Length: 344
Image (tube, rainbow, N blue to C red):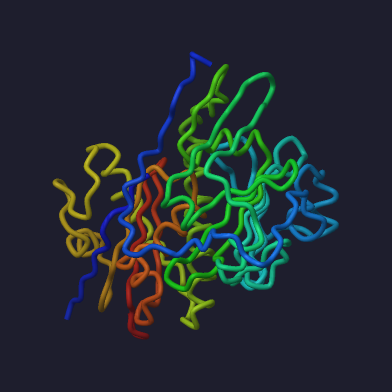
């Protein structure tokens, strides 16, 4: 995975195969994992008995009985549809449904039940009560998979198995607390490959979407990034951002340009800097900022990546910005923040 520097401007089995995601995000500080033996007894790895983890494996009727009708349904790259519950950001949840069954849940709202964890929970409590392993082995349909977590993974996105449910924890390293939780079944985890993966047998591959399907996936991801950004801002007592379509189009063009040119940068060889691109699109603003990233599996993952990078975090939580445009082209992501006057 790759996450770019932020920018801001102001105007006025012997056949084992190894796959790595080669993360290059700079880690500015490291959490103390506090993995030494504690006086507390670590919990038994059992399937969640309450909260969002209960949804895994349930059908659509069960989901709607528990959460009601979603506010929208977004396509994903991994075969499931995201059922988005965003009417109340304090209860923000995305539920992945494939063939009428829940296969994954992403929860970031501070009032969502993510038992046996809690959004905002100090990471020390989690490390003291859960067994955190560097290797996670999965046998699936006669194939063997091993996810190998490095030190960065263990610090900011550890993976825990609770029965037949896999739980990815996103840690806010700046506050030392749990930012969000993702529950997955084995097949979905293998498809997404969020960690270094070794396997024997066959690898579950994700098919390449048709162009029109890609655009649906991208549009859904853009909206999810807006939602999650606003959840993060409200959590830090910063006003939420409004969607700006013109700025979104600028962001999308930059993501596509980075893909087409294979040049991961804030400055395009063809279209120039952020200020050049906004000016060319006649976007009126007082100040602006940009976050870029590439090769993250989806919107929740990239938003959490930005939150854990000092410069990107400053843009995400900047009190001056009023509007946001997000542009996603395949696995290239751009956020363009702007500050508008009331007259603009």
